[in-house]
Image 1 (cartoon, one colour):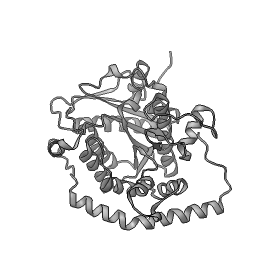
Image 2 (cartoon, helix red, strand yellow; image 1 turned 180 degrees about the vertical axis):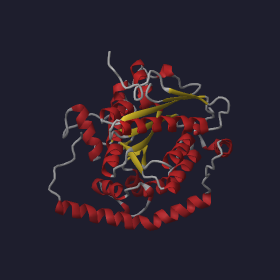
Image 3 (cartoon, helix red, strand yellow; image 1 turned 90 degrees about the horizontal axis):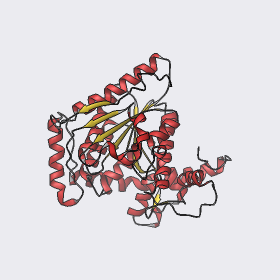
Image 4 (cartoon, helix red, strand yellow; image 1 turned 30 degrees about the horizontal axis):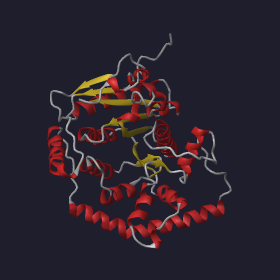
Amino acid sequence: MRNLDPVLHPAQPLTVDCSANPYDLRPAVAGIVARVEQVSNHLSNIGSHQKIVVIMGEDHERPSNILLQASLLKSLQEKHQLVFGYEAEHSFLGTFLTDYLEGDEYDLNTQEILMLSKLDVTGAQAIKTHLALSEDEYSQHTIKSLFYSVLQMQIPCVFSDAATCSFHLDKKDPITRAFMGGITGHTHRIASTIHTTSPKGVDIRNRVMTHLTSQFMEQHDVSLAVQQCGVAHLLGWSPDYKFNNSLTHHFTKAGHFVIPVFLQQNDVTLDDIPEESFEALSQGVFIEGLADDIFNDESSSKKEKAFIRKMGAQSETKFHVLTENEKTDICLEIESSALNWITMARRSVILEKKNSSSPCFQAA
């Protein structure tokens, strides 16, 4: 039997029961923060420089899961320099501007799209674009509240998911293609299409998210990340998604200490995750009893806004609900600055081509 460090590898996850008040996020936040501080202090005491990644597995339709992240980021920021990794296409900014803005001057090629993301170091431009222009299928007001909080707190945000095209991984995107090659064994010839929600597609996306969030941590000397993802990415999802394809596995394999956060809901339970993931979950946090409310279409918009305000009041935290006037102002800001950003990206690509003699990107 292995002699595991009892602090880093306890027998059971830290468990938080929020059922006394399902709309109060404070017990859940306190539990996660306590685990982060315990691990952080212990790593420091034993002379380890291992970075910590907190992975928040959310049900996208449940605002309680999303607002928990906003509260957690605020609490962690008081003591730590951190980055927020978000499950959205890393090429979001350039792709969205190209699709939204009319005119040939806004049409970007693949290299320019990648450069635009690289220039948007903190992710602020991508967040503003999402706030102003993107309409999510579910919990759209809550997601905008989360992004507004991240923007106000000036926490860097990495849109870290693989690039997609028509529900399949985008082979034209160099980063996505490199990881597709890493899975299939063919870097230059990838004949088959891979659906984004297939087991292979989810595995590749998790590898890309791990790579891009880890890359930011390394380049900017950040020792703590909070990575958002759908719950199926967290530890796997029975029977299709294995633990070895999960974000927890890939971040651990990358050398980080991972604190997975599993939120149990009426239809999301431990029965849904593979048995082989339980050992990894034991070093994380298990939360139950948070509000189960679901909002997945525009018809429930008013109820969702009321839910956000209620959860804020019960948690003694103010969550901002973006108004239409605020969205319009951000939209005008995006439109007025878009051409400058695109021009910078084009010039940087030209300069990079002139100065670079390095080989093409290869997957780790």
